[in-house]
Length: 359
Image (cartoon, rainbow, N blue to C red; front, side):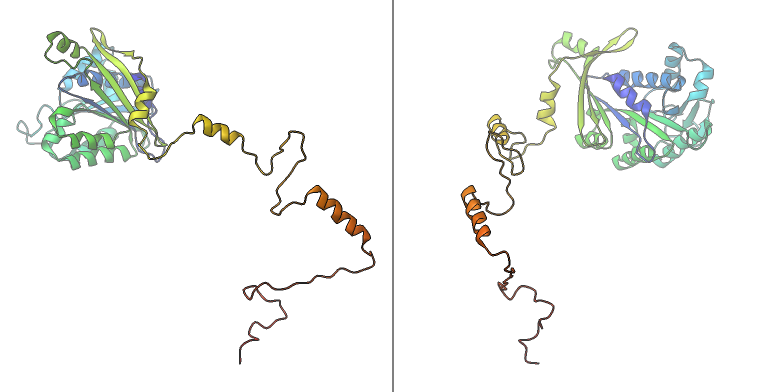
């Protein structure tokens, strides 16, 4: 399931469509969101290196950790400095977020890292991200991925409306291929989480496997294992639910399948409650199968009867009618007698419609 999310981020967006976005949400009882974010970040950089993704680079907006943390992590899995300079750009909002160390609003300390000294300016963050995508080379159609390691730090300095507008503008920009970000749900009101979930196409929620927080053993397990529940919104409006177990191991993050009745979960949570049945019962299906259609062969060795909109004649009536026709004189000419049923009918062409008026 995690591989399916990585594949969706890899494929990016269609021409004229919004970029897919992934929201990773954890809580105090299951604080493994940073590990999941690190997994998707490193997996996506590997795809960019292999040139198997729509994006040709990634811009990491670092709020929660120092850029050196991510650079050392990428080097530990085989990326050297030349590779990182080619595909990775980091907007450092961690070192000096309020500009106390430097008077410049933005400064470049290396080819990879650019320090932003005013995180309160959301429009400035948007402009800096686009500048990093433009400065990385490539033509105007080259797309990049954007990753935020913490949306909560942005919400500390800006309003929910500003942060939501930033994410929406990034999704709709022609140079952005995909977007993913991390959020801790316990630090804000539920409406903040609901707003970010609404503008995301994929929502990954981390839940603890053991709800007994008074047991020390269970608390330790919550720091090493969690249920990774994903909700994917498709273009046709359908929602797909997936669930896996995320384990923190010495070599990194590992996802294991969980055998659950996903269909039951979808039925309970996705299908709305209505006042009528959406499906037919067995008796209703049987009754529908036994309905004789008007233009369908009825079989059973009987004559085929097709309803033509009039009351059909029986066989006896047909024989009497044929005998009467034989007795008639063939030399006689037929006549048509027509009586208009009411004045509502349209008159013939030779009649004056105003004949009854005294003009």
